[in-house]
Length: 276
Image 1 (cartoon, rainbow, N blue to C red):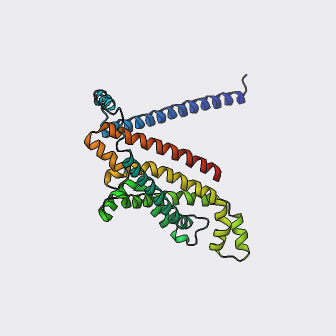
Image 2 (image 1 turned 135 degrees about the vertical axis):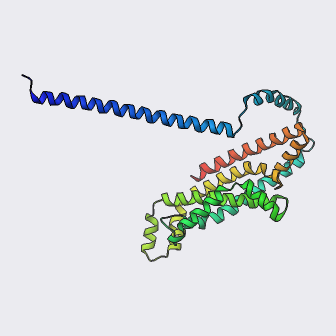
Image 3 (image 1 turned 90 degrees about the horizontal axis):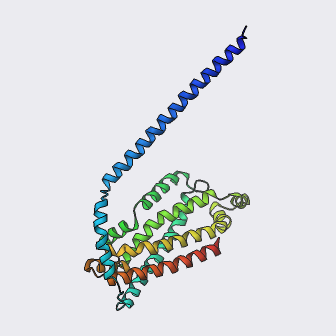
């Protein structure tokens, strides 16, 4: 005679097996639905981006022909290119410096743990998101209409976009930092501003300077194309060469950009290692 407990155990085991199979089928259906959704998304993006492999295959020989025309490089205007490259570096340096100076007080407002005006926390974050969401290229285009052609529009475009990006990173560093030294200084009766300047910022200064160096390095690369919208710098010569289909001149400009950017990358990386 079989035990009732054995019968109950068999029923429970069968029920558990049924539930496991049902859960496994549900997971497979969910994974299949996710795969179909992702596949549909990429198909839609493929269509919207107008990807045409045939055009690429037929266009590559033309690109090869242009590259063949680019050799040897044209060095006759190298002094002009060097001057334009110096304009680009100046735009990046001035724009990044202005952005860093503006970013520091904004980062204090946008840091939940130290903001002196909690009601301004979200508006400050929204402003930074708006500045980050508009590329320096677009800002430069707008400022060309306001202040005219030339590097000044590029400086303003770089400064506004970098202001939002750098301030957001500064605020994240501040929120992740320990507030022990800040609280210790506040306990002596010092004001919030004094505590921030003398207790918090000295600890964060190396990482803030490292972040600023990163943005300067990034902006040198980004500002090479601002001349396309009339913001001066080496990008203006780049656009002129493309318009004239002067590929040897274009190759010289691209080579100069690569050399300068590589050197700046090395210098910036070395400085960041010294700071952190």
